Amino acid sequence: MGSTRARIAIDAMGGDHAPAEIVAGAIRAQAELDVDVLLVGDPDQIESALEKHNTSSKLEIVPAEDVVAMHEEPLIGVRRKPKASINVAMDLVKQGKAEAVVSAGHSGAAMAAALLRLGRLKGIDRPAIGAVFPTLIAGKPVIVLDVGANVDCRPKYLEQFAVMGSVYSEYVLGISEPKIGLLNIGEETSKGNDLAVRTHQLLQENSRISFIGNAEGRDVLSGRFDVIVCDGFVGNILLKFAEAVGDVVLQILREELPQGIRGQMGTAMLKPNLKRIKQRIDHAEHGGGLLLGVDGICIISHGSSQAPTIFNAVRLAKEAIDNQVLERIQSEDYVSQKPAISSQPEL
Image (tube, rainbow, N blue to C red; front, side, top):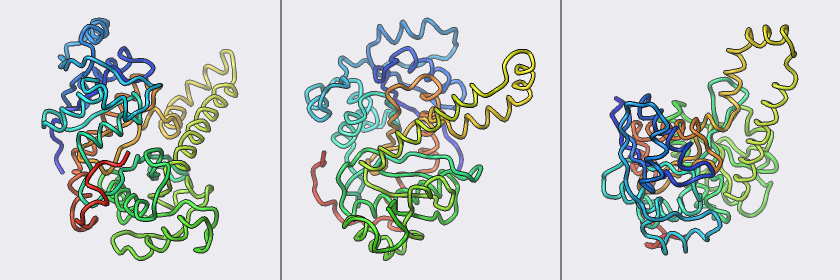
């Protein structure tokens, strides 16, 4: 479908390098991605960061009086600080003044604010954070969810994760009839704990998705699966491990390249290849995870995010908007329109 100019609210105060790196990524995003960026936070700090860049782009600043700190309990922080930057950013989406939120701040606070202010999509009991991983097959990523939103899950939640992941894989990643896998300790249907066994049965019976069976740890990056579902406890460990492996591979490449003039010549020749390797395995290139299941586009980036990650997070948000991910998840073709388990957000 055609691309339109989106309005993206960015929590400028969230993250280890806020607001300087957040602002730098936002400037690049507005210049290159055909989006309008709204920087939410302390106007004085944001203005100071903007002044360091020689740019003609005019980014809108939306004042916010407070920040939910990383050490705060998410729900308490969000409720006690209604004017915190993450709350103000979510309100912009709720009011129709923005179409997406990007935050590198407290991930728990971002999820709590999204649930309290935006609410869940119809038919979804729990939202999930989906992260895109590279695979052994070039140009064929896999989305894993949940990677941190729900430590404890019921089989029904994982079934909904599979449906949402399938929608995202098909319409954003461009994969026809995405193949779904359930992360487990073996391929056999009887393997795993009670959650895995019961979820396997639900996924097998769901005609809306293409479930092909259990995925062992070695299968995650094989390219055999397009979507892999698991609870947020396991998924977050998997995400952090994969990020560490990517960092190790990049470091090994740097250390093993020849030194001196000969090394510089060789490196120059290999530069395009090295750039493609970095793009495939560096987590900064993916921008963060999409919080699927809430009534708004929300990208949760790493706390250590710098400008390139913020740029890619905005790109990820725009892709979700352009491909109508929310509308497709809500369609009767994918998720039944039954009421959620509770009318109040579960945090």
